[in-house]
Length: 242
Ligand code: 0O2
Image (cartoon, rainbow, N blue to C red; front, side, top):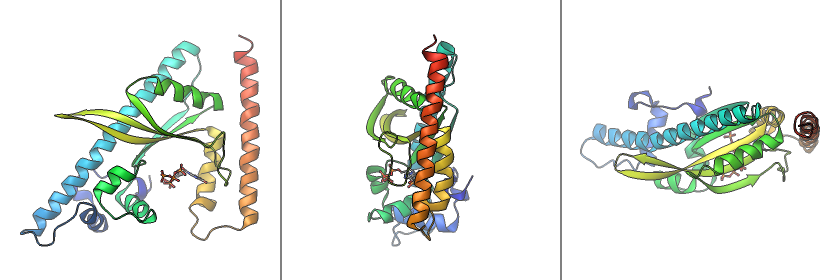
């Protein structure tokens, strides 16, 4: 797992660079009496903040796994091939705040970023993606905050996925909090394109020529046609023939 997705669960495990960023986010006070106590306060505040997202991610993962099991028992089909989850690292959080021209504060992270906790769901067929969305949102304890359907309306790059930002309710000692989690749902084929394009173009600091961008878009279109054809074959064999 890359450094970007490293989840630190203990104060001692933060690197010096991470400590400096956390001090900014938690409003380190250089004029307080004891610098060590003040650093500890900042690290504890960050760990408490992060813990809520870890719990929300786990809860949603369990919901998705249960949903998959239930569907498999009912329909003898696996709607969900795999689930991956990650918590954004403090470095990525600060980079995103800076990109959005927001000051580095925990309040901005909580109020302006909705992808601190992220779950990626990989499905065999396009229809499975919408099946999972409908069943997940029908559960009642999860509220849809935003939906970006990049399958019906692919990004300019050719990127396809269904993005949901949902709010998960967590019962903590003495309070109930709502935590946003980003869910990316895509087929195996869309995932293989996104994984390769992520390095080739999306996160390539040198950028790519228009010609390469066009070639990548063409690859995404071919993959989308294959996805649709595979779904038609599946439906003709297992749905229409029932
Ligand atoms: P990473 O490195 O994957 O984590 P937001 O500010 O988050 O509300 P944003 O960032 O415009 O709005 O969200 P968007 O565009 O809906 O999707 C964000 C995520 O989708 C990205 O996360 C990528 O994971 C993925 N994504 C979006 N567009 C592309 C693309 O063209 N190619 C690939 N490969 N992935 C894409 P991050 O945080 O930008 O990056």
